Length: 248
Image (cartoon, rainbow, N blue to C red):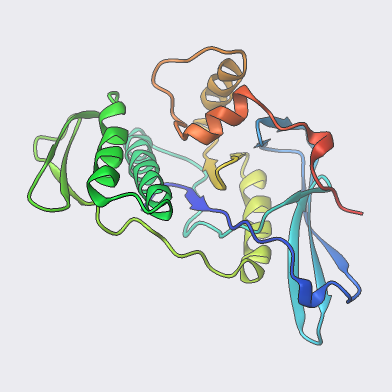
């Protein structure tokens, strides 16, 4: 899957290790790329660090960018640093699918009945009118999605949208390295309030930055590339950087 959308884990404190000395390690320092965090555009140079404790093995604790504490993140399967027209279209398709499945996961956590979950997931596809012509529920839990420019429908199974998250301690170092690689490749990295991260290639970065800036000014640009509701909410109501935990 080509989308660079991947889950963050809200797990940043490990009581077992609180009494141990904490160390830090510089992973990368970059002046390239762009970063949005909780609706704020961070300014370069970007300094990415991780903290760890020895117990007696190395236990990775947290990731920081410019001394701001990030939650531990899972790295994408493949980091994309450029995109053809076809790949951009697939990127948009994948973003819509991921947003629908994230919506389904949230509703299931709230113990919503499956018919309600399916309706909400279908609504995400129907709202993506720039890439979806129409949808149709098939028998059971399968949604037929008619993507624009594709004559045959794409069957999508809606019944299993929850994706278990790995232990945050196992993801701190891969995530920090991925952030460094993304910025070195001049990518745009978006860390959203919902816990999702998007990594967009340089070819898309200027357009997405302009769109997010417009959202921050109260506008709604046509054909948004990043449509995650919580990311857009972050842009409209940024969390003050002064209120965020920082590295001691």
